[in-house]
Every structure is written in C-alpha cells, then in structure tokens.
Image 1 (cartoon, rainbow, N blue to C red):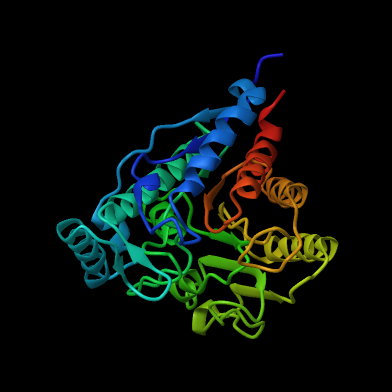
Image 2 (image 1 turned 30 degrees about the vertical axis):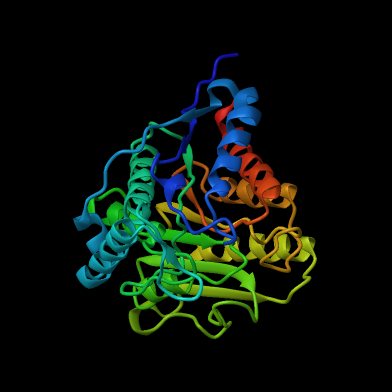
Length: 324
C-alpha cells in the first residue's frame, strides 16, 4: 500500500562532518561518517518513509535570538585563527575549533531550522538532524562541552518568531545535562525544558530543585539519575513525566536533544539504555504528539557502532506512524 502520510526527514549539512577536533577527541569527525553510512544502508527498508532533505540557510539574525553578538564573533574568530595558523584552537579543555567550525555550527542550525519548518508546514511528519558540533551545553555567551551554538534553542526561538508554535517542549535525553538550554529558557514559561541525565556528572548542573525562575518557575524539569539505573526504570520515569508535562503544558511543537550517550556501551556515561529503549522513548514522544510536530537533533553519542544503531532505531521509530 502506498504511503499516505508525510515522510520523516533526515538532514545533515555537508559542513558538519568537517568540524575537526582531532581523532583523539571523543567528538571527532568519524561520528557523522558512521552515522550517515548506517542510515543510508539500514533505512532503505523504509523506502519513501524516510527522505533526505537538503538543509537550507541560517543567518546570524537567527542565532542572535539566542546568542550574543560577542559570542558569535568569538566562534568566527577562533575558526579564522585555526585556518590562518593551520592548527586546532582550544576554547577550553573540552571544546576545540577548527577552520570549519563556524560553517559547521551555522550549517547544523540551518539544517534544524529547515527541519522544523518542514514539520510545521506538514511537508514532513517529523525529522532527525545530524547536528555537529552538538549544541545543548552552549549558553548565550559561552562555548563549552564540545558545543558552540545551541541549535535546539535557536530552533525553538525560530518557531516562535515565525508564528509556527508559541509553546515548545524540549526533551533532552543526553547522558549530560543541557545546562545551556536550561539557562536560555530558565525564566521563560513558553518553553518547557525536560532533561533526564546522569548525576552527578558533567557539567554538574541539573539538580532536581532547578525548576525555573520567576515566570518560568515550573517549566524546567530535571531528572538527575544515578549511574547504573535500570533501563526499565528510566523508561517508566520518562513516560510518567511526559504525561504529566503534557497534562499542564500545551506543547505545540516538540524538539528532542537526542544524545545517545545514555546507551550502556557509551564511553562517556554510565546509564543502561539500549537501541530498543531509544526506540521506545521515541514512540512515547510520538504517541504524546499524535499530529506530529516532532523534530530531533543529535547531541552526544561516542561509541560509533552504537551511535549508528541508535540513530537508525530512533529514525525508524519516528517513521512508524508514517507507514501505511
């Protein structure tokens, strides 16, 4: 039977794999190569259920809805220094710029903006964007934790600015707390930030009592989880929280910070999820947003074979409701 529903979009900006941190760095160039190879091979079975979409363009004005001009200038300058000096530029102990970093960060944001636009207008049922460098640690004025531009935050503000959605839910299942995303929306009741993460762990934020401030009080929900938590308990917590959140917060669009370093075999975390668990989490989100309007962006995930399998499972689960 022909597919009667819009397909799932898969987007990867050509500049994203070129961001260079050195092969000894966990967030190295091989991540997207492994991911793209697996997706192109394994998702053929979905036929027209998943389609690759060319990323569009983003402007600095799009990024300035979240980041300061000084911060954006610092990223460009670091990339320029890396190019003119023919070396990698260390922003901090974890975060490294190369000649392609600015183009990769801007291009990844552009791909996510294209994705949310196509989901919002119904061209796509949902979408996954292979963003790199990742974004959820980036604050309005600081690059950190491998991250330079907070792609998910920029996309949420873009949706609001364009009148596509005024109430946005951000779900972050990366093993690390997305301190940058939390900071950006901590006093904003129009964006709900929900994070499950290993705790204590980098970057040290995300305690249960961090729940928002002022008018944003109650629209941040952190679930700090102990290392080794059984996957079944993780899923139970997720599904209950999601039901509670959507019972009070009428989300018009959901964006997932899809970090796959919560997998049991990831070298940078100690949680216990498997590919099947990520698929179940994805299905729970789709059930909660039956009319679609879900997009996800890659955050962490540093075991290349595991990352490829997790992304495939995630995108397949996104596409299940697109099959007929």
